[in-house]
Amino acid sequence: MASRNHKRLGPSRTGTTHFWHQRLTAIALIPLTLFLVGLLPNLAGATHREFVTLMHFPVTPIMLALLVGVGLWHMKLGLQTIIEDYIHGEGCKLALQITMTFGTVLLGVAGLIALVMLAAMPPA
Amino acid sequence: MADVRNRPLSPHLQVYRPQITTVLSITHRATGIVLSLGCVFLVLWLLAAAAGPRTFEIAQDCAGSALGYVFLFVFSVALFYHLLNGIRHLFWDMGHGFEMETATRTGWAVVVGAVVLTAIAWILGLQIVGGM
Image 1 (tube, chains in turn yellow, green):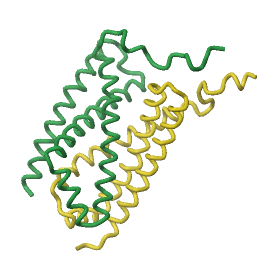
Image 2 (cartoon, chains in turn cyan, brown):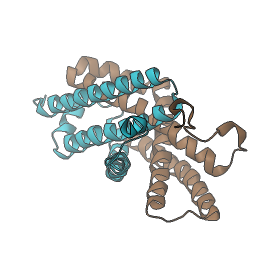
Image 3 (cartoon, chains in turn cyan, yellow):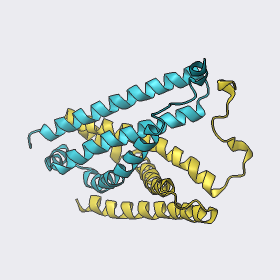
Image 4 (tube, chains in turn green, yellow):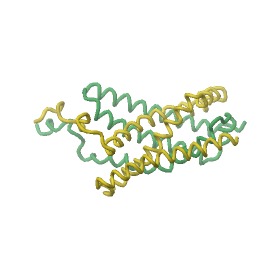
């Protein structure tokens, strides 16, 4: 009976995981977003050839892959909290959490595959 | 046993007078949502590049349009705000800066810092774009 009453009142044992992962990814995102800020002006108006050339320096695809992976993980944790706080209907909340999680994974896989394809493109 | 459905989920925002700390707190969430949208566009842009020169040209035309620049500007403001306020959060996590006076001061520092960093990024960024 006790366990039934405690259901849906929050996680036990893994309660700090969400908090900790949000902070870990936040710290990692400080240099990663600064890299993006430095990269974007160099890619504004760039041709495909210029972009591919830039992707042949290993640092570019590595940093972008980390940004996509860590950034989307951070995004997922943040959006999860926002949905938990503001969506009050249990069914709607669950549907949104599932859609949001699937969407995040889809974005992550698509972004990483795009980066691998770009890094593997022969120089034009 | 309290009814799970009726337990309070977050502070009742409407009954409070807006304060710098509360306004900045909700702005952190709002900018987080803007950045989520930015993540979607970033991945779409990478996919366009991976698909080849023709699709990348379309993506570059979109990004370089007036609407594209408006979004890039909003994205950059959101990024710098979320970055600086996120660092403010990390200091709170370590137990620093909870005094009302300090929290107000660091709050305004985040606002001013976000404006200054956005200005610097766009001035330097547009010089790089112009130089190419």
